[in-house]
Length: 100
Image (cartoon, rainbow, N blue to C red; front, side, top):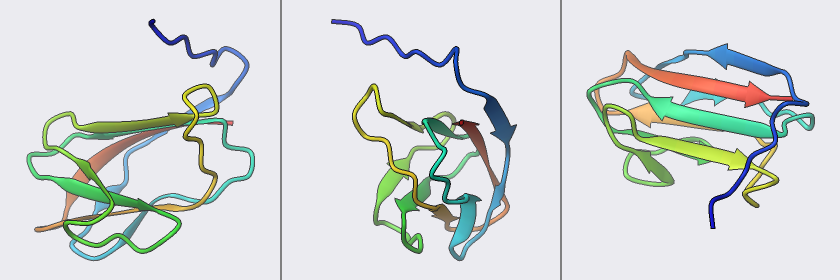
């Protein structure tokens, strides 16, 4: 069964943080968050961690060139904590969409 995400009642914000070789804030904590999408727009793996410092080879792996992670209440995995990211060489772009 295909899932349907109802995001027409949220305001979407698009950002593109540059991820470093040490833990980097990708998305601040927000109790208003109803949706988030993080997509790796680089040529290197990025790891994200929710509510903790990001560490290489731990957490959620976003593969190079389009690996992504989506969260919402409708999907059942919404978390309002801070999201941090890390990559091996640094200076890699992560595309972030947040809905509040």
